Each structure stands twice: as structure tokens, then as C-alpha cells.
Image (cartoon, rainbow, N blue to C red; front, top):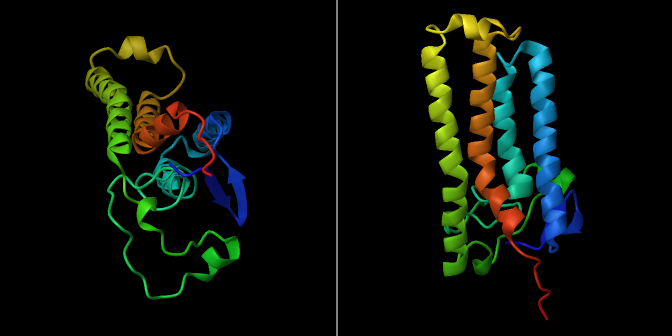
Length: 189
């Protein structure tokens, strides 16, 4: 795990656990607010796909794990592809482009692999149960319409929103668990 977050050229010290937890809370609160705004915009019919796609830059800039960048080392342990082309101008302007990473920056040791596996287990067990329950609700919605008609919210939109939330959690939750549970990092001498 990296101890600094490079955000638009400014380095933010993320060694204390409290700062990483604050980052996780801010990211999820922002996603919930955006998801609420999308509900009022179009009931998640079109915006839900864009909301799920929004998690890709969130992972890349803040969380990491699936991509190079962010606080968590890539889960794959593979070096980045060599790119001979210059970085895009937008990356240069935002100062998010980074030079070639060192070998220890993308290789996971045994402790990090065990933490990654534990985080995936902790994240995907409740997500799997949630998706199974969501599937049951979608399957039985025609059989118990009177119970669901009490809500003023269209049932299909509600189920679609729950599925969108499950997809967002599936992409971001393992990294968030790692950031939340890792103790304070010691400064290297």
C-alpha cells in the first residue's frame, strides 16, 4: 500500500489510518449522493451505466487495486505495459501521469496477498448474498404485487438501483476494506 496519494500534483499523506478511512467515507458518500441525483434525474435508466463507469476513474485515482495508481498495489502483480507514446495532454495538465513504477511498487509479498484474499472474501461474501436476494426479489415481484404496490417507487427502478449499487460495491469494496483495516503506516528511515 502506498503512503501518499498524488492528486493533481499535490501529495497527500495517507499513512494515518484516519485519513484513509476519511477517504473511504468521502468516496462512498459521494457515490451515494451521485446515485441519489441520478435517481431524481432519470430513475437510473441511463445514468446507472455511467455511474458504474464512474467507478473506473475512482479506482484508478484513489483506490487502485485493479489499475496502476491509487493507494493499493495492483492485485495482478504484473508490471505495467511499456508505453512508448507520450502521455495524453489531459494527464499532463492534471498532473496524474506517473513515471514507470519501480518493481516493489507493483509486486505483492505474501502478507499483501493474504490481505488481498481476505479483503475479497470479506467483500464478495455479502455481495453474493445481496445479489442472490436481489434475484429472488426480481423473480417473485410478479407473484406478490400487492406487497410491493404499497411503495410509491416503481419496483423495477428500485431493483435496478439495488443492482447498480451491488455492481459499484463489487468494484470498489475490496480496496475500501484494505484501506479501512490497514493500521497506521510507519515512516521509513
